[in-house]
Amino acid sequence: MNDFELESRLKAVPLPTRSDEYWEQFPQNVRSQLRPVLAARPRMSFAHRLAWSSAAASACLIFALALWPTVEVMVKDIRTVRRELVQLPGHLRVLMADEHGMRYLIADK
Amino acid sequence: MADADEELVLQSQNGNTSAFETLVKNHQQMIHALTFRMTGSDADAEDLAQEAFVRAYKQIGSFNANSKFSTWLYSIAIHTCLNWRRNEARRFQAYANCANEFSTQRTAAEPTPAGAEMAQRAQAALLKLPAKQRAAVVLTIYDGLTHAEAAKVLRCPETTVSWRVFSAKKKLKRWLAAGDRSHERL
Image 1 (tube, rainbow over the protein chains, first blue to last red):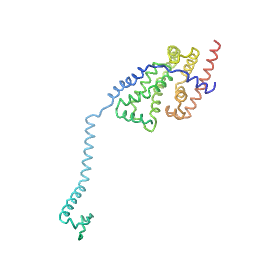
Image 2: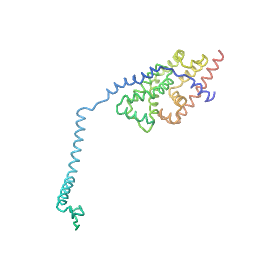
Image 3: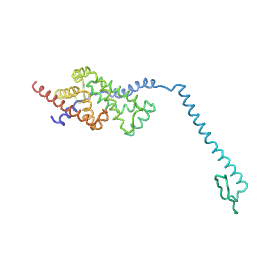
Image 4: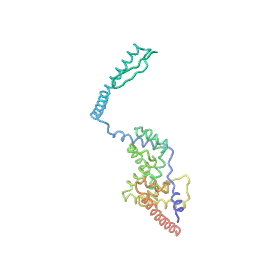
């Protein structure tokens, strides 16, 4: 017997036939068995959730505090610009910001 | 991985059991065929198919999207069958029961008695194989996997699969030839 003949013999073994109802019902049977699996999944305890929430809140606070000086300077610059714009609206040509602060170049129109 | 499976797997991983039910619907016939060929018993095949899907759901969080879902599912189903087969007493009992199972089955084709006899001997011979050799034969001959793909499913080297297939084929040919000769004498 060669490989082809063997494979043909093996593949000729029929599979059991099952009704359409069986194939419809089978996934639902599996799903009904999943409910105990879902129920068994451990839920986070209150203490665990509190710890995670506190850590997230602390991280946000630290981030905000670290960024605040930069934000404060930006807000101050924006106020300065607005004030200068009101006083010299037509002559203001260039605004510069460097380590010495805000500078502007005024030119005749 | 097929796009349809990919989306369903993602939803299942997020706890959507309806999505997993659809995955079951898509793969149930394939898994039933595999479990039947591994056990030779209709009832056991149904139980093991169900168990395989439940295990797949429990492990779905660990599924790696780099491989095909069907390959991963095959692996779970095969190992479910192999664990079931560990009890040697069950193996011989199933082999003995195979004749009864087969004689009560009704198929659409209604094979002739001679055809049914040959099919019965082929199934019985398949069940005589050690479980791991049977698994290699089922995956490569019935399901058309390459030796490399079967090795992934069985979690062993490809050379091991090749050796198991070679060894299994040798035994099957010998048993079937002996069975054919004794049948002819009758």
